[in-house]
Image (cartoon, rainbow, N blue to C red; front, side, top):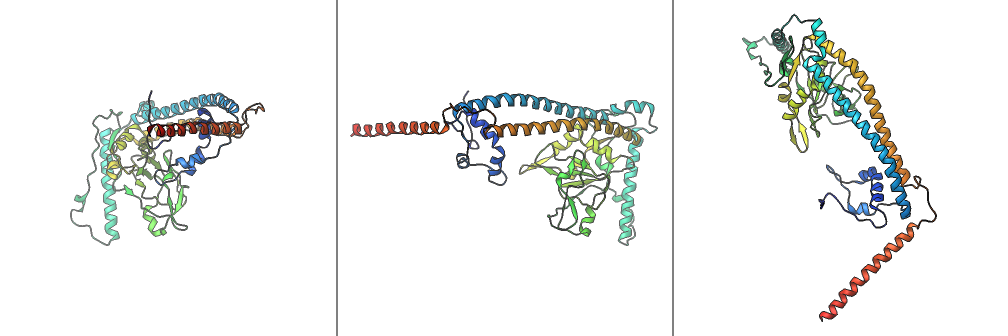
Length: 415
């Protein structure tokens, strides 16, 4: 089958090596090639760099032995890696099935049968809306007091009604559950962080990498060029949900991490959006759990916008997100069940990840041994590489001479 390359690829036709030997050598140099790459957004490596790259050239017969040995060892290694990746995929699928069961209520079906809720879904929703309005009014009164103002007449009429959840095409929830928008669950508490340059000294601020596996790593920080007073409005507290505002990967934009115990002041940057919920009605841990579900991911990924290769979401994308809300006691029961299973899954996942890292290190060691003369034995009867190179140079020179002669002869005949 015919094939072609674009300007991002270079094609070579080796003479002193087999294509297989050269392929394995180039693979062994991958990290060094990356380090040699030049450019900002898209580093690249030129033909000149590749042509000048040093290679320890063994005899042609030894090259064949090296390739055969690598084929044998790496095929076994690849088979093991394939099994590990299959296990990794099954772990991810199991996690999603477990999450789906939690979100739809089947995970706590037996618990619910033994602990029927005295509150209907409609009553729960009304309680959510009442609590939301009460919280908003309390904040407004606190602002008036702080400013030394008397609340104006009919100030309650300025209450912003929350975004209604779009429940079209959503599954039916168990009795006592209700669909709610994030806006209904988070009155006036959604806030972008602040952009802060790095500094040697200053109030601590989280890095984007702090969002890990549904939690916030409070050790992933840097010093920002701002004072404690400037950072104070952006300090995180336990129960905050921090949402990734932008990322180069669509699967990562909108991911969230839950803040657990906070031991020292730390703020969040403009790359994150803070979400606080009515914690007496919906557990922040429950929202963090649901946030990784296919339901929420689909909502956010459909609304993400891309610019210069970066996907971004905005506050309206978040407030319109729909969350299934069970009675608080059932949230606690579901989270306890999930936590128990997650610890077992994590043990298996860590073991698989460790095995994959060991496989990658073993591959690297095999390639290193192959191109340092330690993988296969040397044979003194092999034709030395210097002889091979000398013959190639002679053949090139011989091939070039007749071409010039034919050109001159053609010129004479034409005259």
